[in-house]
Image (cartoon, rainbow, N blue to C red; front, side):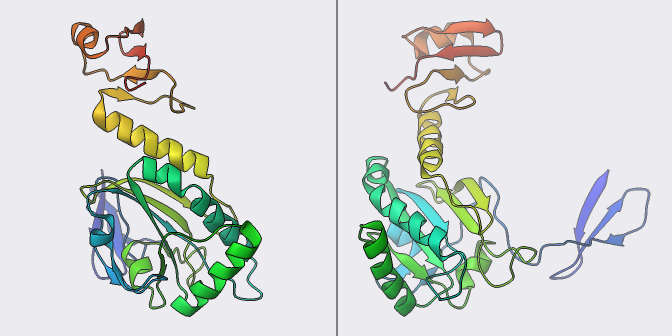
Amino acid sequence: MLRIQKVNKSILVRSFCTGTPSKSSSAPAVNYLRIGDVVPDFSQDSSVGKINLYKTLGDKWGLFVSHPKDYTPGNNIISLCTTELGRLAKLKPEFEKRNCRILALSVDSVEDHLGWMKDIKETQKVEINYPIIADQDRKVANLYGMIHPNADNTFTVRSVFFISPDKRLRAQITLPASTGRNFDEILRILDSLQLTDQYKVATPSDWVDGDDCIIVPSVSDEEAKKLFPKGFKRIKSYLRTTPQPNK
C-alpha cells in the first residue's frame, strides 16, 4: 500500500507500509486542482479593469484559459497564443449559446495585453471580446497550478479549466506551450458536461453533439423506457445506446 505524506511545504515523502520513507524526486511545489474541487476565487487586473472571478461568472459556466506569454519580441510561442485568442473571440457566440463566459490569462501587464490585442485584431481580423487577466505577480497562475516547473518555471502552460455554475472544476486540459488548443474539442467537452448533467447518459468515444449517447448502467431497462421515449438499443446489459435526449 502506497502512502503519500506531506512533511513540509515543498517535499513529499512516500513510503510503503513495510518500508522506510524516501524523498520524492519530482514533488510538485505548487497547488493543483482536481475535478470536483471548488475553484479558488480571486480578484486581479485585466484588459477590462479589475475583475473578480466569482462575480464575473455569476450563475454561468466558465471557460478559463491560460496563455504562456504575450507578444514580447523573441518569444517563439507568440504565434500560437495569437491564433488561439483570435479563434476564441470568433467562437464567443457559441459559448454564449451554452451560457458560458470566457476568461484568459497570461503573466504579462495590462499594457502588454492591450498592445497585443491590437496585433490580434490586425492578424486574426477579430476584436478580443473577453477579459485577459494580467497576472504579473503569478498569484492566479500559482493558485491554479498553471506553472509547471519541469516545463518552464516562469510562463504558464496551456491550461483550460471548465467551471460549472456552482464554481466546481468539471474538466481540465493541459498542453505544452508548443501545442495549440483545439477549440472544437473544447466546445464538445462543454456540450458533454451540460448534457450529462441534465440526463442520465454518458457520451462515448468521438461523440459530437447530435450523436447517440450511452445510458448510464445505474438505470434499469424499465426506467430507461420511461426516461428515453425515443427508445434504446441494448448491445450488452451495461451498454445501451439512445438518441441524444435533447435533440
